[in-house]
Image (cartoon, rainbow, N blue to C red):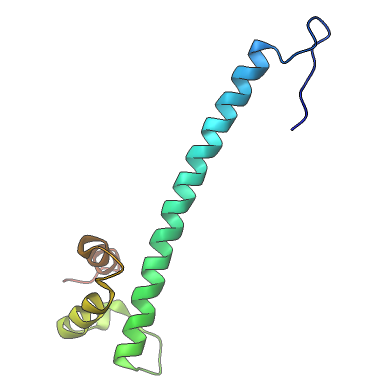
Length: 98
């Protein structure tokens, strides 16, 4: 990134520097939030794909219509990749009683 020059001292002013630092911190927080969102969406995608694979229904998978046995199979299949509480939260967020 090109340096802004100030006519007085030829360097970035303290105010500009503070603004850049503030913008950088804000962007870092946004990246962290987006990474968490990507992780959550990947988790949901994996649950739906595994449910479709295990249940082999031609129609779309609805987490609310899974039996407890089917939910347990999906959760067990993904336990090595995700924590139990994360998997359970997918079913909970979908309105499924686990």
